[in-house]
Length: 472
Ligand SMILES: [Zn+2]
Image (cartoon, rainbow, N blue to C red):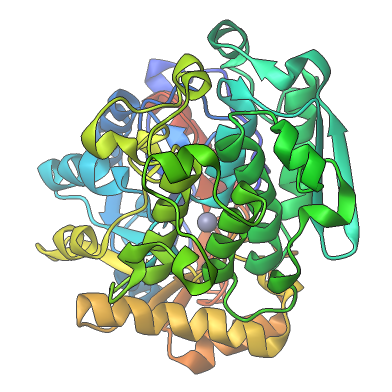
């Protein structure tokens, strides 16, 4: 995940100008490309995806016009002065499943290497990336309260969604092409999305979970609006402090407690008649915990399933069905926010998929922290935990050293000199940032510039590489 900072080249180059010129002969240099996703998406407000067709077109051009190096090979070549002209390195940030399903086959066909930087917390506890969760909640069809109030710590912020509280398929179709580079917000939902993104981005994962858990309640438990019972109990979304159960504050296990939160909120403290009738209730105290948690290897993950399943009384409501966020049978009964359901294209890689990705040695896995925080917003101790744990998590999955790192969001505001020092001392050999530029022998191997790739045709990509290569 990276902020929108890149100028977008639009005019295609003339055929005769195609390719990266080597007219500028000088010291070795190269361009590192930054991808996120290879997918055809119904909507892409952060412009993270390159379509599979465009990706093939781009790879054809890159393998024909450039020399694709590994990241390690580039850093080593710069130190020895041996970097071929027109060198590029391919990198992917975040660790989406489509990197394996869509990108890897194309890379393999063309013998092109790449580094995939993975936020390890999304592998070990699979869930949507928070920015995808925000997109799903606000920009996909569904119902929300007219006044959306979210509280984090002592701060409560509200958005008046007005008539956009109800968001039908036709509304979604009308605005699906919107992205954050557009100046206007076509509905209050788009304004809320933009403002919430900026609000959530620098938060700790605990606070962000808090904010998103409040959506959970609104969305899952009431099908987009609160029940009379919840309002009566003061546990509905627009009742200020009561929205937030006391147990979460300052707790060290936010994921686990988030599940309790949802249960607590959904029930208003006890199970509904429907749940009792369907046999999914529990009648007191400790028994209220879902039975499937006992002995499970991923209790916090499955607890969330349990809670959601119970909140919906074991089946989805008519309203959820009507809004297209239901699932109609068997495994599809998973709640919409879980990977593989209403946002099936937005899954992170699983541990097994990580191993599959590196099996033939063409693709390297790098670390991208655990929770994808803005590192500069954390204490040095917290930063170290994010950086070191992501390395250890991924090494445990892959059973091999993980030597490359990329900074979440990656602009110079998103990390500090202390961060760079930590990355080096934790044992990484190189690190990538997210500001445009060519890589030269003078580049800091722990702050390598990269060029964000958008859903461009091949000529536009080559033109962009050439622009960057020409900058001294
Ligand atoms: Zn990222």
